[in-house]
Length: 118
Picture 1 (cartoon, rainbow, N blue to C red):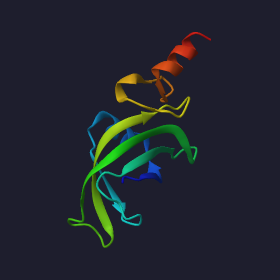
Picture 2: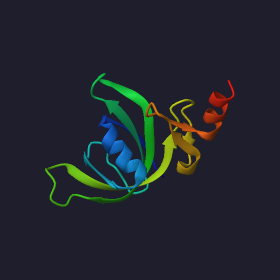
Picture 3: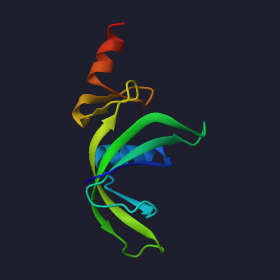
C-alpha cells in the first residue's frame, strides 16, 4: 500500500519547475519516513523572499530508492511526475490539464474557465 508524504522542505521555484517539466527526476532526502517504492510525495513550493509556501505543488511517485554515495541516512528518490496541484482549488490534476499563469501559479482547466468567465 502506497503512502502520501508531504515534503515541506523548501522546494524553490526552479526545482519545482524542473520536476514539473521532467528535467529533474530525483530528490535527495533524509530517510526519516521509511520511504518505499510506490509512495507518493507532495512537493510544496517555497518562496524564499516571502519565507512562505506558495499554493503550487506537485505529486510525484517514487520509482526507485538508492543510498549510493549519500551521507548517512540519506537516500536518492527517483521520481516520476503524477499530478500538478491546482493553486486555485487544491485538486490534483493531470499535467496536461494545468496552466501556468503569468503570476507563476498553476491552475486547472476548470479554475481557468471560472476565472475567464467571472
